Length: 325
Image 1 (cartoon, helix red, strand yellow):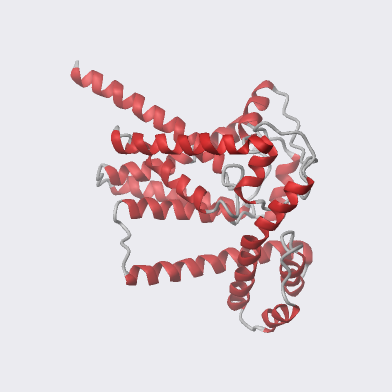
Image 2: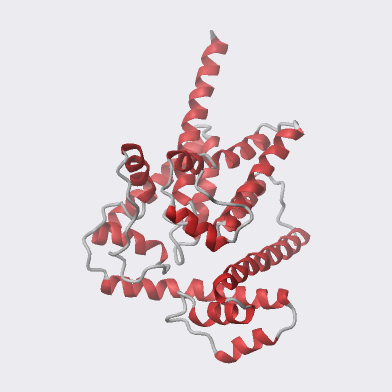
């Protein structure tokens, strides 16, 4: 509907998306990607033995991951994969044993290398050669301003004959720079953010976009208020831009909301909310690096989980009432 093709590169696809306004179907579709994780959860919760359902669920999940690859995203495939692993661990499908840890580590490294190779290939699209692409990633990446790498390390990576080893070291260095630069950039943001508080329209932009598309007044998103665009500023950077010194109040309510979700899941048989809790575990874990509400399609999943939980409880209540009647 928006001109994206499976046969084109990530940068071309992104440029195509920028030239076509988002549609209400696209927003709703992103929200209901959460249904894949909920149905996987319910499949194991009720010990359903219909194999075709399981295959269908994982087929959709793999497609969503591949779709993210085609858009040049690295974070979304990782978060989708980790959330799936957490669901499987919740039901004991993956046990914490040494052989499983070794297997997961091996698969994780392989997945990590593939993600990095995709990133390098994506960069080659505008840097023309692999060598220039690797130099750009390691020396001029947007997150390298205050986390510079030694030039000797870059020469070492380029001297490797194996593309897989190159991808591994490029990915490792990028990961460390990603992880370290967020706190520094957050400090920079506190000193240089001179705009008024965005009152939630930055972190929760998806909700604003949804209603603007419905009303026909959506005209794109501007970022002129961000001091350094394209940088991670930990979880708290986005919250600060929205609420400034009232960020502490937001965090208190955010923590209270998570506690209520946990109590509902434990005390009120609200097991359908557990996939959301598992997602929030990821969100909390990467506080020092990234805001998973505003990035990685996080808010789409949160809203999707809440809607689907409500629908599931409503249908369960109707089914119970009919059975009692």
